[in-house]
Length: 499
Ligand code: NAP
Image 1: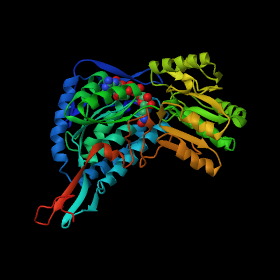
Image 2: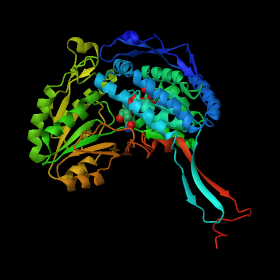
Image 3: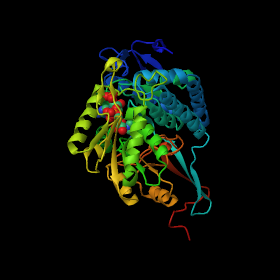
Image 4: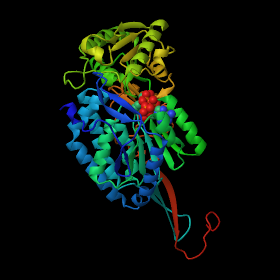
């Protein structure tokens, strides 16, 4: 695999089944491991959004009338092409995002799984039939598509998150306008090509490249986009929700996390260390579900620290295209600066730095954006490093005295995405899954590793009650319609003619 897999030097928007060249400003797409420019991405203006929405609006009318099992056939084809192209997609994903190849393959696989899962929904999309309170009357509920939906995705899972959103939207009979993150547009280009090859009718998916403040904002404000499905930062999500609220536009938000692994005194410590290392340092901690807190029972704190430090020493850091590397780069300089800021905050707050805490700049590291895996200990729940999302390879140990205190510590943050507990006590397992206030709970595993047929999302500041993936994703992209068929031949009034 080489960078020659990139078949263009500048990306074009995909609107109404055509590749539309965009004049004007572009941004370089930079390989975060090497600092090299991979290609240019156009920074479209609002008119591109208008064109995409118009194309989607027209296409959706026909698409909604295609029987769902036939719509699903296209998703099966998408899944097959992604499967054939998995290695290429994974490699390109590593080039633009930096995550190591093994994880990139996992992310592409998530998209493949989602394609086949949502294709299956084409033969389900279940509604309900239910008895009417009146004789000779039939009652049912059906899912109806909403129309044009807007999808705004982040750089950290450039293909998986797009599939979580676009596949359910499409199988349910909507048309899509998608704005990928400017940092990682290559996956969007590749996925649009796959849709085209799979035979998706023109205009059912449209990709507009450009900044959030221009293209994303225009989508949020466009009155013909009836749903916005957004994944990204809390701040952007809140602003989007406020505007959608003003327009009474449906909005699904998946935002940050401050996820914790709880390690109890009876835990299998070797297993806990494996889970923490994978969840804290995989994707260099740039996952919404990344473990950034370890809440540890004081009786095992020292042993856990020792074993974590030992495991961290074994981590190979570098370019994710090297199969031996376990931890890749940070996405960009702004990411590095944010992490550095939190290292200073952690030290000032009095947490003890056990390992890492610095940007790696020697040799080849200096060409990209690398940060040493970092471990703080003796953090307390009120510290900013224990409350705020850092989005880097930084984990803070918070010692506690009891199970109850551990649950309280987990729930002390404003986010509620993922949590995990390592224990062998079945009573604690069941209490924990009940009391941990997060949308995802893992027992004896780290905080990452969602499966696509389960709902993905979180409580509190992580979202606004919707879920990506799983059958629940369909709720974002459909309206429920109640249908009554009265075959009595006379006027029957509900609640009145029931006696
Ligand atoms: P971000 O800055 O909010 O960007 C996310 C997307 O929103 C990008 O496509 C961005 O465009 C766009 N955007 C920015 N400003 C916008 C605006 N005013 N209107 C409309 N769209 C706008 O987030 P990020 O830093 O890229 O992503 C990291 C965050 O995502 C973290 O907080 C992470 O926890 C969260 N995340 C959450 C989940 C989850 O499911 N809970 C999953 C993954 C990531 P441009 O960047 O192109 O300008």
